[in-house]
Amino acid sequence: TVTSEFTQGLPKAELHLHIEGTLEPQLKLKLAQRNHVDIGQKTIEDVQKTYDYHDLASFLAVYYPAMNVLQHEEDFYDLAWAYLQRAAANNVRHVEIFFDPQAHTSRGIPFATVINGLHQAVVDARALNVDAALIMCFLRDFSKESARQTLAQAMQYRDKIIGIGLDSDEHNNPPLKFARQFEDAAAAGLHLTTHCDIDQKDSIEHIRQALEIMDVERLDHGTNIVEDPDLVALAAQRKIGLTACPLSNSFVSPDMKGKEITELLKAGVQISINSDDPAYFKGYISDNYYAVAQKYQLTQAQIIQLAKNSFNAAWISDQQKQLYL
Ligand code: ADE
Ligand code: ZN
Image (tube, rainbow, N blue to C red; front, side, top):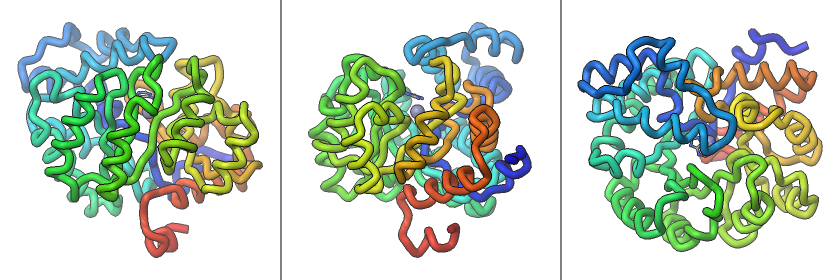
């Protein structure tokens, strides 16, 4: 049987982790005080009381306002450093960290402040034996023009970013809305992924666009793909990485998508386990492995396969993969 010691000790890669989603209540309060930002909450209990959500939109309504406490480069550094220490404790050897520049630039924080703070933590993580990289996400509920400007800003920091993604509210915001930005990013040598959140209005159509038209290399969540066997076969054949997040799923739906995860493993899809927004969904990556293993009685062999998949779907060289596998 799979124990929590086993899931914690297993070397793994984390491929679906929003750095803003690692803002723990304690750090939120500390930064609020340090930056004189009134967030309307004074204690950890006050903060936790606001963590009341049942779907993507109600989660995002809590998530974005909290980011006001992030003001200076050192705040972004402290946020990322706190996560990277937890990653090390979870035996995460490689992590590709999402960040949402528009959630900050839209409230007057310079792009440079965000990326320089995060990047310094990425550099310092080598001392923790954690290999880290940054993926810039566009907020899909913002305009194409805003995404275009954001990509232009990112190009000044091209060497600090390995890829781009798409997150935030998926409702009526299909991947194809950003086809142009994805094409431009690919031309600049950036890797491509997109959220296809669970149980969205147009889940299958969004997955189809992402795989057949936009040539993404991974799907974040994406487990609704099981509804279309042809797309499952395509994902397996192209070695598309799917980044499932069981505890996050359990907040916005009645289950952790364990049946889908098992089915995709059987179909040979490179599906992995990740933590999404661990400060908000009650668990870091090892907790996610453990929760899904317990609830769906996954075997040790299945858990090991999920961890192997995380390295195989990572944006690292084959040589680097050999170090971990
Ligand atoms: N932003 C942070 N987490 C997200 C998720 N799981 N889906 C969409 N946007 C997000
Ligand atoms: Zn996510």
